[in-house]
Amino acid sequence: QVQLVESGGGLVQPGGSLRLSCAASGRTFSVYGMAWFRQAPGKEREFVAAIRWSGGTTNYADSVKGRFTVSRDSAKKTVYLQMNSLKPDDTAVYYCAARESSEYDYWGQGTQVTVSS
Picture 1 (cartoon, rainbow, N blue to C red):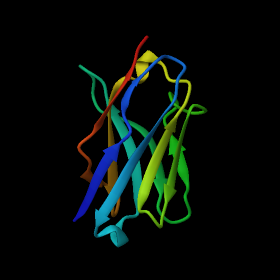
Picture 2: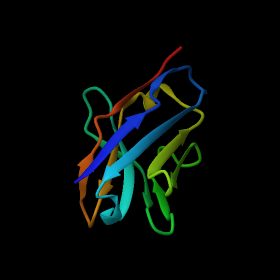
Picture 3: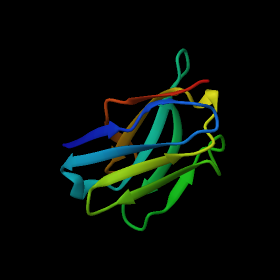
Picture 4: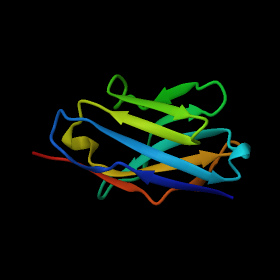
């Protein structure tokens, strides 16, 4: 089992920045990759960004390219999501996820991000 705990959400004005953190514990040696997803009220959960644990290859949703950056600290077993130039449309609950193969099997509890003036 892998446990994931997110932190760093909050209220920010449009154009502002936030950094989310996701700390992993448990059977982390089996993790192949980690990702961030988000779910806005009344909408389906959507992919935001992902990173491979080994090598650090990243990919992003088109809606966040150039504004968000995903990174990892292997020693701390932590993944980060740096979010810049935030827009009201970025308002959502952000979830961290981990996978051992092709599917994301482990999920955090989520952290609320609200972008509003």
